[in-house]
Image 1 (spheres, one colour):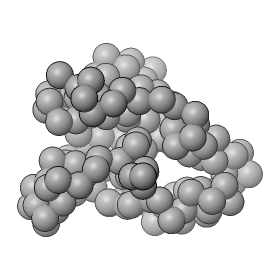
Image 2: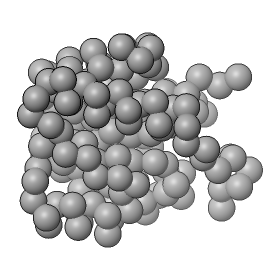
Image 3: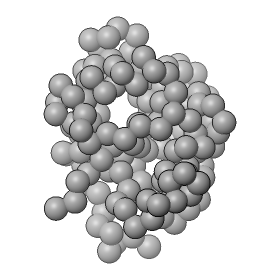
Image 4: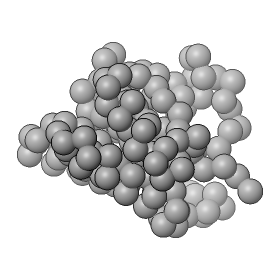
Length: 149
């Protein structure tokens, strides 16, 4: 059986720590890989640069993608993932502190599977992240590899 993983793309160390803590509470923390900017996310998912040795490894079950990232912004990461046949169907959840309607609209137009605003309150943040983790790791039923175009 393949281990399903979450890729967290987050440049804020505090948000990273809170996310990992919330996922640990629902026993998902050992299934999370973290990258800290948009270029690292692309390299990880497309098996390039420092992650070229990942070729042939299973993609994550879901990407939790922040919008305000260094080097390559979250919306551009989303756009490039949707243009590549290897990542076109990869579930991407925008997990951001942005409350801008334009960010939400651009995310969905760009192919995001969900747009979730990070709650300011820690307890609400932890509950939101835990629910996301459980849904994408245990409830969601993705297409099989054989079904990919």
